[in-house]
Image 1 (cartoon, helix red, strand yellow):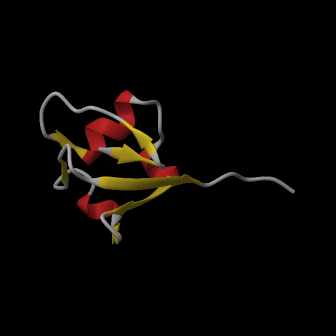
Image 2 (cartoon, one colour):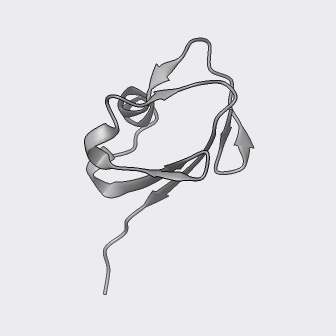
Length: 64
């Protein structure tokens, strides 16, 4: 699998929500694209990441 262009190996298919939490992302503060499609936040728990997926994760940052 590729995450933001970097190779990542999944030992088993993993729910997107679990993947985000395990890697320290705050799911409410990210946008995710999987294989060229935006994943709605409501679908994070139902979306399963597979080893052949390409994923982009963008974190929202506040500031002024």
